[in-house]
Image: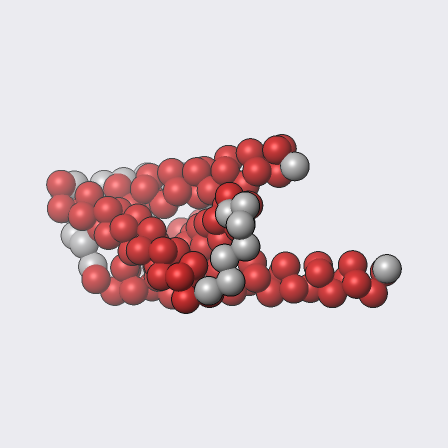
Length: 142
């Protein structure tokens, strides 16, 4: 069980680092990121705010997995979980945007924060849907 927890933490922090990396590179067009496929760079340049939501789907998924794996006691109040989860997502998205104040040719955008929150909420929902499907699958097998 420990390896699953470490796997979740590893992916959570890799996604978090990639969010900060892509938020803080000087060229918002990603023209210097030649390791990315051209179609992906072109897509991201034509969907500025939507491209913010994409990595936050993974962030939301692994944050939900991490919170679920850390909570030894079953927290039954979904509102409490959602509240703390939303605070963490807002903090990370805001920090990524605030960092852009200090980078030449970059500027923060409140819509990026909103798209980040929306993407993470989607990831959060996907995680709990995934858990439900797995739980139902095991019930059918038994």
